[in-house]
Image 1: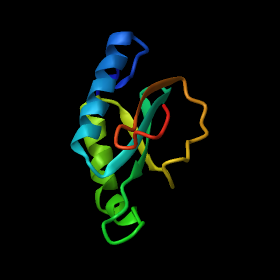
Image 2 (image 1 turned 45 degrees about the vertical axis):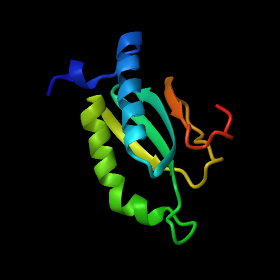
Image 3 (image 1 turned 45 degrees about the horizontal axis):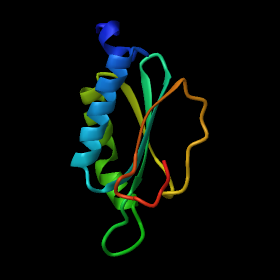
Image 4 (image 1 turned 90 degrees about the horizontal axis):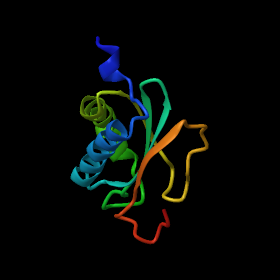
Length: 115
């Protein structure tokens, strides 16, 4: 495995490329309401998401259980980095982590959330 490929650098072009991948992935996944991605260390990108509730209730867990692993795998392939995908409990919850770099925050499906 080529570590140079799998390590996210703080180079502006590389961060922009990862941001573009995450933005396209977010746009393609309508059930993801809010995405927040941070570079924690080395090649690790932590991606936190909130989901649209199911049509028959307020519970987003069925979608998470059905797609969470697939989404994490997709994000690893797209970004060429290690991705830790985590579900946030609500649209207003923000993870409390010490990240090296915030990569992107996407919430255009929730226009009332200030970025």
